[in-house]
Figure 1 (spheres, one colour):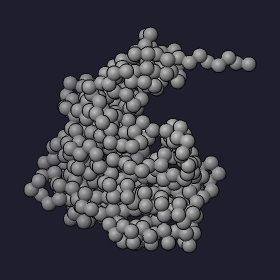
Figure 2 (cartoon, one colour; figure 1 turned 90 degrees about the vertical axis):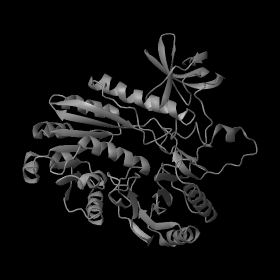
Figure 3 (tube, one colour; figure 1 turned 135 degrees about the vertical axis):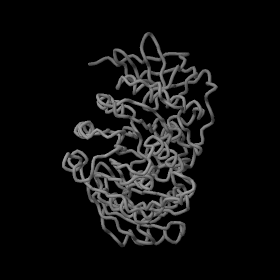
Figure 4 (cartoon, one colour; figure 1 turned 180 degrees about the horizontal axis):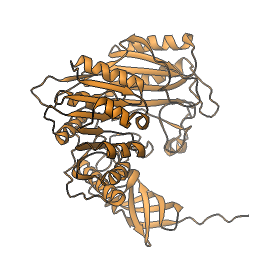
Length: 475
């Protein structure tokens, strides 16, 4: 019989720095200890949860001294929901941490000279900035320690909210989220109440039984709202009355849609979307690169990617255009173009833009966005980047003078990097939401390119995530 492990608690430990994945760190007995939901400058007691040779993971069980970097949190669920791990940290200090995170990744992974790094561009709006949130229905509601300790609490098994980090089947019931406009909270809470009152089955991710699966809420700065209800079976006798309730209760919703997902996973990129009421899309407006030009319009359909912080997206694309420094005669390739936001943003200032994107629905939106904005110098292709971007493709579409690339978090496939090294555009503007994979890719590109400028951009206040733009010029 194994002896129970001895509980390890370190007392009066000062948190010294922020770390990856929203953690903070301290050093105890020559070992790095990672702790969530604390701030550099806090003095805490730490209970060790996992101990390895060179590091440990723990949680703060008492705060003895509060850091002057702390600010009051605005979220009821902070510390349980994994979404805003830095909400208790002063925003200026968040920006310092993100700037350091970018620099550390580029230096450590890519051995990249960061002397050309500019100060991070902070977000003017740090709450209610998201234009998209996805919520989950579950019959396995996460019980908070406060609820468990309350003898008068009556358990309710159903939840509509966000997954508990690391637990695929447990969902935290979200009453208030400060990241999207308050109408989002009202929509979610009234739909939950309706579903419980009508005894609709919330989905069970262990047994794969139940009716209600997911809820996607999107909105624009101009006041358009899209709601997508995702259900597990095509039962219109249950679904249509619910959609009618939503339509009557929320006339602000300009696009009401639904998806039937009978699969075991929640991905819906391969599923049909049915527009029940209103338009099958919403339209976002963005100021043009040159303020004297008319604003751009971007049509967003249910499966389309669009930067989740709309005002900050304009700043991000402005930096991309600055780095590209277009004069009108250039052929530009926009890799991982999504709905063509960057492609259309720069198209008015160059000869031609060639966009490539994996998701066919997004490519259809990209083409439509060019049409809406009166742009006739763009062409878009759908397919796997590594398969499409070949020497024959480049011969057909013209050698790029400038390549803009904005890959997913995994970065670029090595074949794509090698093709860029073979094509040798004069400039590569690399946009990334993951400085670690960006550093890996740029390290390979440095064989023939030199890093000329680095611009971090905070798209996601209160989270550890950061966007970064790098300008590379041919040596």
